[in-house]
Length: 400
Figure 1 (cartoon, rainbow, N blue to C red):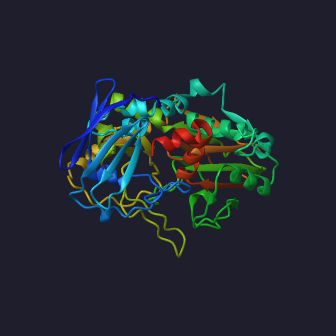
Figure 2: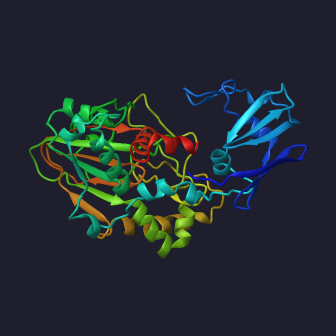
Figure 3: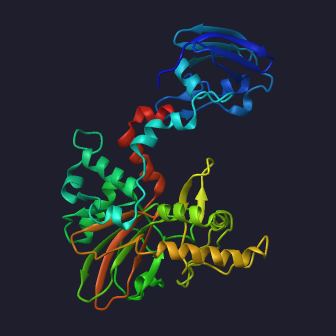
């Protein structure tokens, strides 16, 4: 980003430095914070972007022995070991905290523009389902001139919450290769890459032929899977239709129509478990609410699975109990509204990948033999690839 120049920098107290900018703004930085963020070769390893300095060794009363503006950097010599630190104007301006000179929205402007999500209802998406081609993905290599297919794939998943992949060979081996083109496969007690039928080989309703209502996977993990990919390899019966719901869009409706229900679902913790397997009883270390908000109050995750909810017997305020059941009635009415739930018949040769933090999926009851394969992918790994491919490494590194 382009920043103004520094016109002066002076120690204004024993513990702080004030910087005046050419646009008549000013910033105050604590000495200990500046020293902690020195990026010289003794304090920071540029090849790995990791801190070398032990922050606990900085004197609490550290002060600036000498301050000098040398365009385009500010140099400070500290009174502890005469250490010299150098800070670029742009870095100081971007990370100014007293006051914040670059608003969060502006700081993330490129991210918010390029990575803007498109919330949808059925009418918005049914005639333009996001899709990419398997062969283009497989032939695409990161860091080369032909990485566009993977970049496009990550962006479609992020913007819409899901994406189809067409022309996939109907084999588990090729499906696994597709998953690994995106990110590492996440192993769980179900295995790494799955290849399964409705034989209850795992004690979970996914391994049956019964109807499964809209949900997210893994509410019983603290670290919920970020993405999930399915490939229907074979089905000789009827039914088994999949549905998708944009839970972020539905949460927006709930907040507008039933604000008290939305608020309650942001704070009531929901215990969950996976306990069908004889040697497994997985529960999150801290139960989380259905809606997870960031520090700015924006929705970043929906955790919803009626099947895996444990007994709720730990209520801070018992008066919340009837309010909770009223809230989930409001919620289920919205997520099952035909305006919001799109149904799609999966078919061999076409994979579906979706954001498990945003999109609900379901499956209707089916007959016959049905063979599926797929995998989980961690969210942090996916978001890393999404940002690096679509924003560029320099922009990503500038903000850290």
